[in-house]
Amino acid sequence: MGVTSRDVARLAGVSQPTVSRALRGDPRVAAATRQRVEDAVAALGYVPSEAGRALVTRTTRRVGIVVTDLTNPFYPQLIGPLHDELEKHGYRIMVFAERSDSLTAVEHLVDGSVDGVVLLTTTVGSRLPVELARRGMPFVCLNRETDSGLGDAAVVDNTTGGRMVADYLVDLGHRRLAGVFGPENTSTGRDRELGFRLALADAGIGIAPECSMHGPFEFDMGYEGMLRLLELPERPSAVFCGNDVVAIGALNAAMSAGVNVPADISVVGFDDIPMAGWEAFRLTTVGNDLTEMSVKAAQLLVRRLADRRGGHDDGGQRRVVLEPVLVERTTASAPPAH
Image (tube, rainbow, N blue to C red):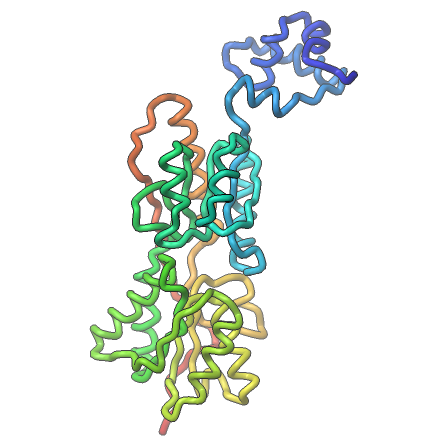
């Protein structure tokens, strides 16, 4: 049989409940007593049981991260800072790579294995936020959010970002523009397109139906979308892509078709993931501090969990909105002369 908390209590000369209180940082335990307990733990090589600690504190110190597509290079940029910030506050993460609207995800998240949830890939009409709220599970939406107003959120101002792209391309002289937008059922895809179209409308410019496409935030969407645009009798002179992964697909399609970017066609993305700055791409894009966005989301959730434990949760949504920045590189320039 392994070392138990009773053995630690005996060596430290305290009661077993005092050992439990000392190990969970209870401020009622005197510093000298806590030191004796820690010395006994070190001497005996005692490892506290997470299950036992959860029963005593009614917390697991774990946070569930729901993300649908781990193959997308965007999401690891969020998960790393999330992990680091939550770890500072004593939480570990569990990644759930499931569809965000599946009932299986709901059951896994409310089975007592996590204290709170971070949603990375929720859709506008996802049932998961509604179910989490109904069952009293604290959660925060990161990058994407829903229209329900449920849960806290840390996002970038996507509408403003879309406007920035349109203004930039119009100022360069582009008048025939295209959009390979993201999914219409995501706040990111919808709001980036909205901002882009609104700014173009302000300039008296529309997007031809054949120049507007919607689809997943994936390489293939950008690749296939660009090939379709290049086959049009009248090509657009610039393309706004819903995110950087789509834009990189578009750049590859242009290269395979022998079309020069930006001399023949300009391409702009969104997110400014590390790949966007690689010499192979040098993608002009809209960026924001992904690390800061993740840290803010973690802090929102930690604060919510603390408020609930303390019994003073106001229940209102807390929302952090980061400002976007246009990052100029080499994939956009003035349109070709005719």
